[in-house]
Image 1 (cartoon, rainbow over the protein chains, first blue to last red):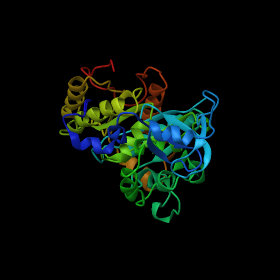
Image 2: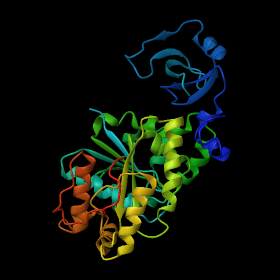
Image 3: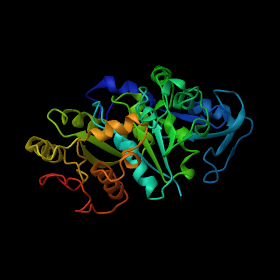
Image 4: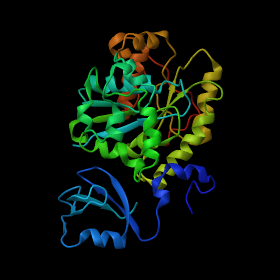
Length: 81
Length: 269
């Protein structure tokens, strides 16, 4: 792990970003307001069978099934978290 | 226009974080700005300082962060608008630590309120835990109140390291606005030396003017008001008015009734 806190691993526990694994991202739900980490494969499954994306128009710009509450609703995908 | 979010942070307690948050907020409100103060200290210092009994509250910032209650449901309209806190928030740390995206809980909660205010001022707790990280993640800039006495600089290095971590992990645009010298005793050479030392040692801008030590601040807190409404012509009130101007990009005035930071403190942030 690299970064400014690399010499003090205890601090990493405070940042969920430090738990990031390869080929994962987080999705933030506008309904239950939970943020959930999913793999790209899980994300593809959540898109099934139908999904929409309206980038720029809305903060929660993608419509698909939330992995936390199970509702089909607007979510935001954070590829950088 | 969206609000500018400023976090007042220093993990050392008793350095006038709460007083600075409320006083700067009141000074900005005097200038006609719409200001929201957010108390994320489980001790509820800002809440108490604004004349609200923290223990009497049913819903606080804890419900916003943990239960995802909309922030406008807990806002109290006082000298500035207040999102209050009480001891319930101590439990939020444990709850948040188990969640993905825990650093962004406050940023998420604030999103709906940013258009309603010109400034959001966050009074951080005296620690570098998850609540302070939430405050710094949600903020555009961080202001560090610093008591002008020996040992007070020791926490500044750790806080600056946390600011670097925050920039790396969650908020690359976080601006280090500067140190606010508080409880300044102009008669003491020691206070001037401490201030000059910290500014140079950490290469941080020292905001002017320094705020003098005065019992009137404690009296204002006891009265549940800011120094600006409690003693409007007091040099401390004038100093915070000047600091509010500095935060808005103005140059400090030489006749603001307070004390300029000593020569030697670096001005380039």
